[in-house]
Image 1 (cartoon, rainbow, N blue to C red):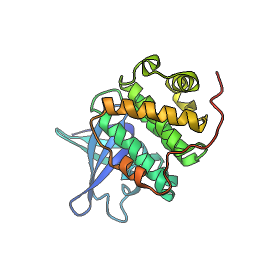
Image 2: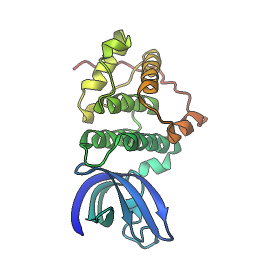
Image 3: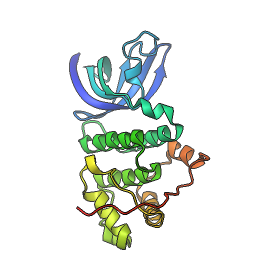
Length: 229
């Protein structure tokens, strides 16, 4: 049984037996992997907090013939802010569901991991509306997986066209630094929803919950368009 260290984020966790957990981790080095965390559900376990969804950091793993086992954790960010805001938490769960949808073992998932991390940071900061964070994330996630077309083929024009180009070309660290008008947002959302229906064949539980939240009406408010570079 070999030992390795990976950097990644816990996307989901499920109970196994009386005290264990099975976690799905999106990693830089191995893509999407599943691992067992022995005793992680015990109140005094050093693995307890770091095997919850959104935990980001380094994971020391034992690599077996058919599975991984978590040995130690060095968590850099738990994103605890999201646990204090139900709406933000479900947007976060939606983002990791998308990561799980696209993720595969032994594939290069660095772009998706960075996108999820920066998207959760944007939710935690709360400086731009959650619906806009969602649309930026969706466009960039599809693009990272080769499923977003040339923007000119979508029929986008004017500020919507410019906004799409901004989302697709801006470094991930600077993605969540702009707002748009409600009119531009609605046109953007319509285009993105139409394309999502074409390329994704799964319903996401967290998105259904978001749509049912009383405070979620997918309205942006009035904001300036992104500044040109």
